[in-house]
Image (tube, rainbow, N blue to C red; front, top):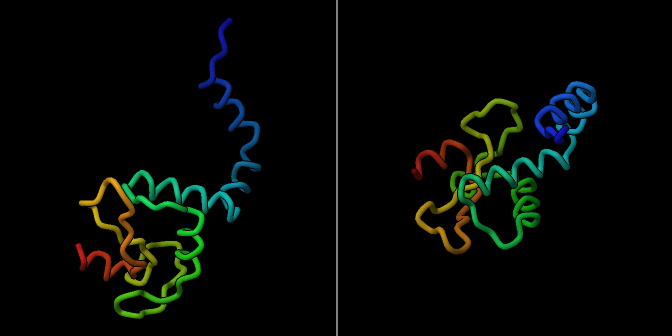
Length: 106
């Protein structure tokens, strides 16, 4: 019988539900998921680990200087990574902004 990865993963997730839940709450997991999300959204940067460290340690919006909130839900003061969507072949990160400034920049 051939190996069925889909069935294996389904069984693994069922048997390891608590461990998986704990992992997704770790800083390592949050970092990995954020960087993967940036890549999916077209953000290009030479050192994503460095970018993540800068992003996490920035406390105020580069434009309006508002202090970032750490809420679970997105608010107007949620930290966002602004990038130029027209640049697709080199680094395209512009600023770290609050959600309000990021949406206003469009």
